Amino acid sequence: MRALDTNSLILASHNEGKLREIRDLMEPYGFEITSVAERNLPEPSEDGTTFEENAYTKASAAAKATGMVALSDDSGLCVDALGGAPGVYTADWAQNDDGSGRDFAMAMGKVEDMLQKIGATQPDVRKAYFCAVLCLCWPDGHAEYFRGEAHGTLVWPPRGDKGFGYDPVFQPDGQSRTFGEMDAEEKHSWAPGDGDGLSHRARAFAKFAQAMLDKAQ
Image (cartoon, rainbow, N blue to C red):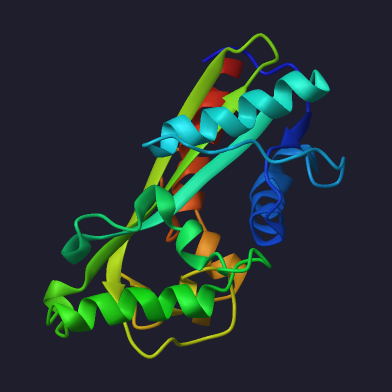
């Protein structure tokens, strides 16, 4: 990994929930995080077919626009019974038809309707995983990637009002509650170096943190 010689990063996201989570995860390392939204920078078009491609698109655009090292996160829900959908189109499934914003209650309902139509009503055929890919990108285009996954089962109806996105319908393996029923500390608890955390984003950050520690040694 290229040495990171700054503690100020620009986060390539307009998602307030994601910004909040990333700030929580970066706090132990003393990073100062600002976002492209706070600088009124536009969102680039995400037309990649992988999380890595979309993460790079966002981070590269932010790094070039600001001259700062940029951090992006592209993440999504992959449902086994739906062939991995919505995957990279997770946020698009929540987009209102009139372009007024995203409605994740609608998106969760869409996933459930599709599962019901194919008869996926029992837990063993409702397996899914969240994937998060972090991209750290320098203004010269150099990039590093860190991927984390959290596997679990989709439940219905949604449970909990914490977190964001599809959290209320995702029950991680080994747990009796959904991400929507967990506070941020529990959802993202992890120890640097062992990938020990519940959330996909925490696991990606564990790899990122370990890479930074290894580089510093």
